[in-house]
Length: 423
Image (spheres, rainbow, N blue to C red):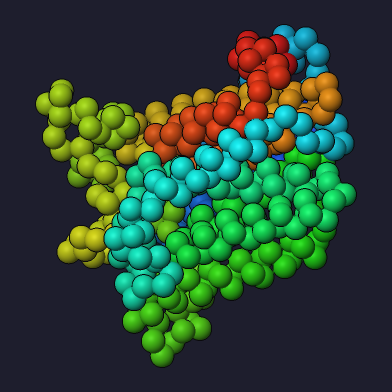
């Protein structure tokens, strides 16, 4: 495939998906909190720009596959929306603002405490990553389900606190909410994790938007500036030896690589190796621990397996390159993996419809619904880095968090109608 064709496919895929998303949002009226918009924006940033760059450099594969996947997402979104438009009992619409309801604040706090408790043994053994000499080593110890609990319970608690503050006229309530949000932010900063802080900020921003409010441009600008400073600072702390003497250049190079290029390079490495040197995994990377039961003991963790190819060092043994949905789709199914993105588009359309439906419930949207909706939108948007199993685990945790954080208040009925394409 030529570079020109790949770039046309890339641009065309985003154009198709953007047009469909704009049309669909006329029914939802979610604006920037639309999960399809969030998915498109992050996919464009983390895959689109870099895929274009390496296509110009003579490697068109990632651009073509990314563009085709985005187009498939748009088609899935369109098909699901058309079906819902024919079957819907009533159109989804959004109301202006929410009001606090029967959120179980004790349960929300308890879930946050359980999440912190889950990582406490690791932190006691290694120390807080931000405060130890070997930041990267300490940070690498924080993995598995315990970290996934942190990713849901702490932003969920912060989001509940923020919604409470937005609808309170009492200074004490506002101060307590601010203290809770700052405490969560400081804890995640001490974990020296850029993505945890980014997810916290994104969840808070999304919950404000879902509440029917706007975020002032100066606030967005301030968050971006602070985010860039923290991103650069954590990068320097985690690789101080590599940056010594060239800190400025190191930060710029590392930022461009981590945000724009690393994902397309990972996809390019997978497309180079598979199927030329290794056959497709045919879905086994998603059930890796069960693969041995059918006689396959050669199914690796894709991120660790492909890392040496991504960095261009065959001897590299330590490191992880997140393949995301795009990388996993190619590694398992090749071009047939585009079907996954059509299914994702349909699922995102249903998610958006459910969020819109819950916003117009009698009495206004519940605080727990807003927080859970914000987290669901965020995690769907992060399929550029999350794999299929990772997304499934996080969405299951969001569902569990919502069920524990507040009464159902008609949620089961709305879910049934959503899954029947009646909303």
